[in-house]
Image (cartoon, rainbow, N blue to C red; front, side, top):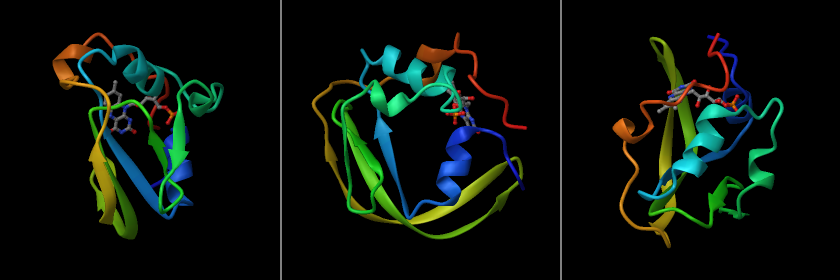
Length: 113
Ligand SMILES: Cc1cc2nc3c(=O)[nH]c(=O)nc-3n(C[C@H](O)[C@H](O)[C@H](O)COP(=O)(O)O)c2cc1C
């Protein structure tokens, strides 16, 4: 399935992923990633990050993170699933966790079509 958002196109040519748990005071960071699109905004120019083992960007500010190396992928209905082997991870400098109800007012920055 071909999906439209910028992140999916990047994921398709990537060796790995980084998954971040945002802190309870990181709504602005969540908005940057969820309400803007990499088609027009360089999101990684607006946060501090470093490349992980797989080359995936690791954010300097988060509550926790893991990095995974992609070894397979498959269609999962309206999403594409990437299977990863976790290769690194740890705690971050932030505290608490931003949850879905905290961002219920967000508008996606890009259509998935
Ligand atoms: C809470 C939340 C969850 C989201 N989950 C997904 C998702 O699972 N898959 C997806 O394609 N977009 C999802 N989105 C939408 C994208 O994050 C959003 O359209 C973003 O602007 C895409 O940016 P990009 O074009 O740089 O990838 C979600 C947005 C929010 C706010």
